[in-house]
Image (cartoon, rainbow, N blue to C red; front, side, top):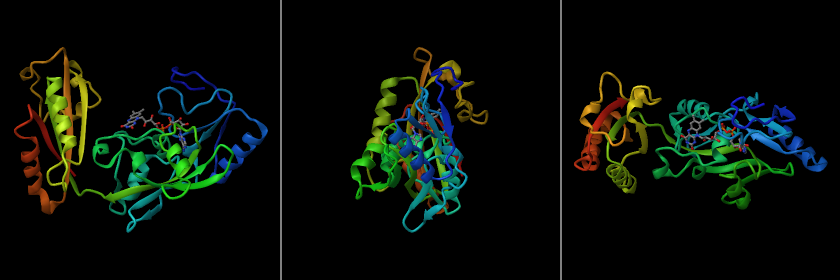
Length: 296
Ligand SMILES: Cc1cc2nc3c(=O)[nH]c(=O)nc-3n(C[C@H](O)[C@H](O)[C@H](O)COP(=O)(O)OP(=O)(O)OC[C@H]3O[C@@H](n4cnc5c(N)ncnc54)[C@H](O)[C@@H]3O)c2cc1C
């Protein structure tokens, strides 16, 4: 039973596979014998019970004993991850090799198969595309229980159907994910607005910038904050006591504020270029620079 109360649905059974072969066997049997629906569950964070199935079988992808993000090819710039792997674990495995996936979600306790069945969007998407645009290859168990490898070059139709396919075209058991060198340091800047038009104008300007990286940011994301919620907002850690926000100086627009969050990756040796990018790109367009932190 799903306990959130939003989609109170009960499956007939929950299946814990130990390999992709187990999944293929289950689906083959379901297909041949006319079982009820089968649904993959990553971390169960989709908000309307999409990973569940009434009276069917839920395949619990996250508990595979042997699955790890361990097929890392540094020279080829990819990592092979089990479909039920959490992105936080993919990141940890990559960091051991000085690498990181190119495209992210903000929240990392989501599964590879779960976000690749949607899109996987975060502040890098304007640069690299969503997560589904950063996959080289997939292993998929189809609705007939076949185990199929697919990519741009091989079984292309299945590849594009499964990516963003809401779990309707097959179960992702392995994804070959594009990685890049992990940044050594990151400059993290927040810009706060009271005017929606200025906020969207600046955001569109930032994501439209092209070039070799010297004149653009690596991450751009905008969000809306209820003014009075700044203190209790889940992002309130952004506004630390060391850098207090002067709300009174903003002249709020119906109790709502808008925030642009941007980052610039750099190495110790190129630290001075960050200030140059900030100067070139942010000034003098931007209304109010609230925060400018260094994060390693
Ligand atoms: C706190 C929070 C923050 C979030 N932040 C972001 C964000 O920054 N960016 C973003 O893009 N999204 C975000 N999301 C949404 C999230 O990407 C989706 O809800 C995603 O589906 C959740 O992944 P999951 O592993 O929990 O998937 P589940 O909820 O378990 O499954 C989602 C769907 O994918 C299917 N599925 C799961 N695993 C597989 C598989 N291996 N093969 C095929 N189909 C599969 C399921 O059947 C279901 O239809 C957020 C969600 C939450 C709760």
